[in-house]
Image 1 (spheres, rainbow, N blue to C red):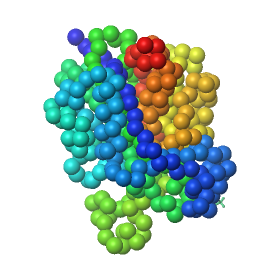
Image 2 (tube, rainbow, N blue to C red):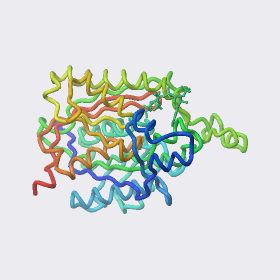
Image 3 (cartoon, rainbow, N blue to C red):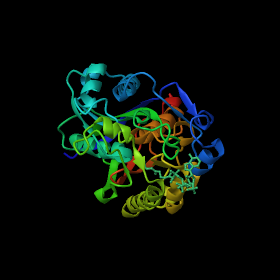
Image 4 (cartoon, rainbow, N blue to C red):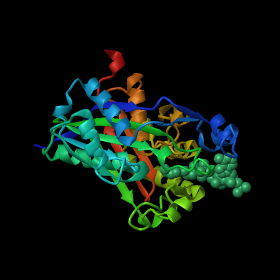
Amino acid sequence: MAKRAEITGIAHYVPDQVLSNFDLEKMVDTSDEWIRTRTGISERRILKEGATSDMAAKAVQALLANRGIGAEEIDVIIVATVTPDMFFPATACLVQDKVGAKHAWGFDLSAACSGLLFALVTGAQFIESGAYRKVVVVGADKMSSIVDYKDRNTCILFGDAAGAILLEPTDDMSVGMIDRVLHCDGSGRDALYMAGGGSLNPPTAETVAQGMHYLFQDGKAVFKVAVVGMADVSREIMDRNGLKGSDVDWLVPHQANLRIISACAERMDLDMSKVMVNIDRYGNTTAATIPLCLSEWWQQGKLKKGQTVVLSAFGAGFTWGSILLKWSLANPVAH
Ligand SMILES: CC(C)(COP(=O)(O)OP(=O)(O)OC[C@H]1O[C@@H](n2cnc3c(N)ncnc32)[C@H](O)[C@@H]1OP(=O)(O)O)[C@@H](O)C(=O)NCCC(=O)NCCS
């Protein structure tokens, strides 16, 4: 019998250290006012010690505690990240070891800011096929490790965080992951990338001197396609499921820029009161933004069982997509 993948646990981790717009004013030629009005960001978190797998492991441990299960029950771990601890071994292996998931296998998935959506859809396949029963999907990025804090175009945007989601099977076909639309278009490769370190430009003193180990973004070019891509895909998933704006309880958009988020909400006929926004406190945490929103809203009792939720993202590649969910995890505040 066909199974549906539903979210049965959610948690997140953010480092304690705050990097505010006022701190950035002392590092580059910028202002709190410019950053807030152009992006919606006031502050972001920075992981001083450790790597992406440390944040991911903390998020998974919190997830296991919320769900009340042991790490040995996990079957598969998928880590979406563009800042793996190393090229190899996979960050998923490091997380598997750090949390003690001794029966799990896993792998990393690279889709930048759409990574969590790509990983959720991938994880759901393992559940829907009946192959596995407990799949942990993590979105984690230590963006501070690839950001040039001398480049005002990019250093104001990004932060560090991790979020973790547990997928399990249900026979109830009215809940869980109902639909998905995913895309990629590699012709967008020149707008947002990290040139150095890979097989194209292996690291040398010269690649480092040229700053090729930092991310590069043509902000204006990405902005234009992100607005259209995220809005189109969100509208597409609503239209093909016969949903109007009033039928959607929450839009959970990737948090790259508040102006992109508002444009997307407008195209969906959604009031901003139905849009999860925490970019002001965390900036763009790449693969972590969506689970970070879901986890905070669920913990605060605002994301409730039975609600209709649209997740939408756009990122480097280009990659973009949308997932339609019927949320089935009971509200912790209601207990
Ligand atoms: C990066 C971004 C915030 C820049 O905003 P923008 O309104 O497009 O700003 P522009 O790049 O046009 O720059 C406008 C001016 O501000 C300047 N500027 C750029 N960064 C600045 C900063 N941190 N502080 C002050 N001024 C800055 C620019 O140099 C430019 O000056 P000029 O007109 O003299 O050349 C915006 O383009 C963006 O959010 N892009 C998409 C991000 C995204 O979605 N990422 C990807 C998915 S993960």
